[in-house]
Length: 190
Image (tube, rainbow, N blue to C red; front, top):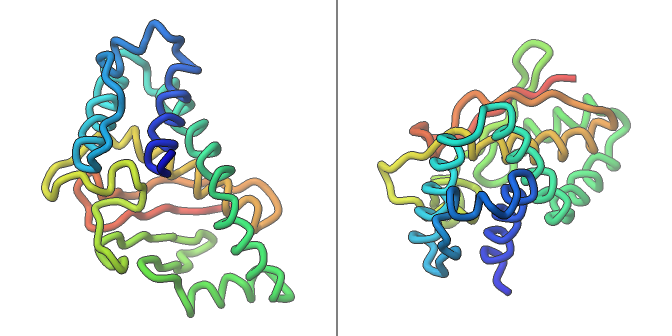
């Protein structure tokens, strides 16, 4: 099964796992995720829009956080690479300084008081996209979707940084590329 197919199944499972199988018709309209990336992005957009209509905000956030943690656990290589980089430095502060001075392609990290601001610049990736997430990165230019979906990324960033820092962190979404910004920005505190 292709990676995007797995991600779509995971999203569907997170939603139906919380709401029950009877929500399949309401949220997904009985449709399976399309194979075409642009159509799949639209399928996700429609499903999240339907979720917004029928579920309270707290439940939506919990569902998408569950999906984000599952995504981080599935993409364990990203976290392991960060932990490997972290292990090369004597302190967390020196590691953060190194991450700030040598950001990964399409990302940046900066200090803002006691917080870190992590930014994704999806249009600066080797292959410019709308979003870092493979499920919605083919959303057509100019089309936006609900910020509910971005709570998945909040949980992904929280999982990643909690492991790197070695204790729980708080993550707040500041802006998002699929809701109209040019970048995704997260405030990380602990």
